[in-house]
Image (tube, rainbow, N blue to C red; front, side, top):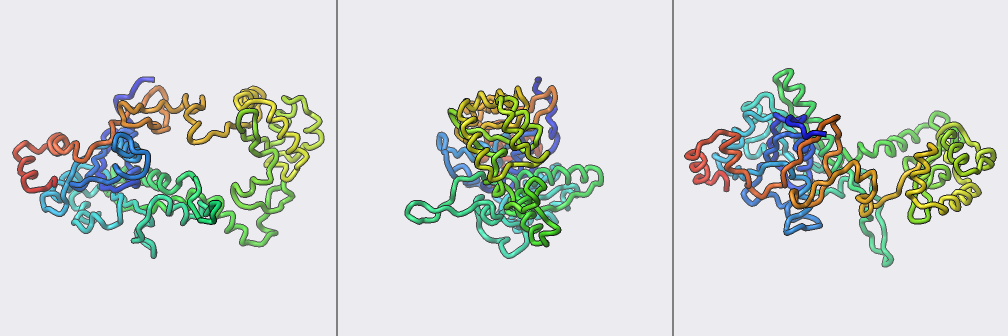
Length: 411
């Protein structure tokens, strides 16, 4: 593949006012080639000091979510700072308010103010709980969105103290991604109609939306049992929603290999037959043929004992190779620590090196045929691009830049 000279979002300009994790909404846009200008207060976004690990004094969170962006400092308490912000918006496509809703409006830079400067501007506010509802002003961090959405169950240690269990964060990632998709839709419409729009997304909403299968299943189960049942393979008996219904599975289950674990997924009869043939154990298929689709052989302990012994006979790598060869579904069971060694991961994610990006990081996962997305620049220091943005983007001459600096517009 050759590196494309014209990235998919080349020519799209984004003005971002953000604090902490919600800034990830523009990371996706920057990765796809948009020109993202991060407007910071003179003291900067303290994301650089948040969470762990800290790499040479800077957080991994900052290195990842602010990569590929330019940083300019503006003191929006000054008239001059507000003037520069409006000049930035004049030829931009998108403004992102990734902080408490209304923060920009209080500085005279809300959507109603900015559409007078640029009628085509797409303005998006991304926050914890959105712009409405009783929690709209409630301070929050990323885990709150997942506990609110019912995704994380409380755990208890050996002394009886409640703690946050290990989990994959949902809201802090899905909210920015859905927001990015929304603003691009807004830009397409704005370029066709000449009219921008105001939109907003709550990261808590996005977490709930990502877990729609479980919540909608519970809603469905509120209806009579003669209307809402389980699968045919389960004799129509209802299972617990989502992955809670996987516990009793046998043909769809995790098993210990000789050196780790694998996930076996022969819920279709055809795949189950392929597995039994590959093992030379067709008597298992004849004894337990199961249903054609969605059959997990729930609670079949006799089968589970047989499979437990079978899977211990080979390494995880051998099982993956055999599933590939004999056509039955099986998957590695990796951890966040071990996944980087997985051959599929290595093939799909050529990591950005820490020498150029501050930390080893995963690239944007989209693949474009016969093209390679340009690698983003390292996440900026506070105000790193002040002169570049004022001079090259806004076209200010040296005298004007000096005047704004003297007035304290940049802090």
